[in-house]
Image: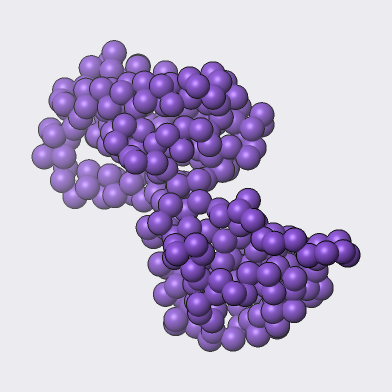
Length: 287
């Protein structure tokens, strides 16, 4: 069984590397993603994009070699070194540049999280297994198609679940489905959604972005001690989502925060928190 699992790892690791390379080499937002990453801190502002592209080229080359059977020990060893480097880079980025974006599997701004580190660790283990038991993945799939297919699906699901960049493709639709199937006036914490909406509407961030809103509550979810409520909006002619955050344990409107996110790029255009100090009110400007 372990030999069959190991034989399939080059397929998994190679596919992830090629997907990651696609973002770095062919995405129109690659430059923005590079400059949001911790590469700026490591190599400087002007070298961040070339380093990002170079990494994409390495990923594409190594990913293609892994997908072409049979996978050699040298290729698996190189993939292990690369995955270990990813893990070290992400750990550095989370500690030294917590506001930076991962820039791994998507150009969407996504801070490095524990899920990102777990995904990199999973790739290290997968690449290491491929080096211990090198074999051709087509033979393994042909020999045990059901078990091999189930294993591949499980690993793909694990990579997706550990990738915050991919949440918009599967997690948000699931949340919207849950909102449609459950009572929309209550959240999972037991705090009525209506109470949260009332708190949000009394807040200064809501009053400041209200002219941008074009819908009532479209989605809501609880995460830890916070409830997030989303409204569709329009900002400078661009479709956006205004996401309000309200603490579940504090019903003070001054605790409410809001982020206005571009629907097309995922970029945060505005970010407001709390009640501004007394005095003349300033116009809202992009964050």
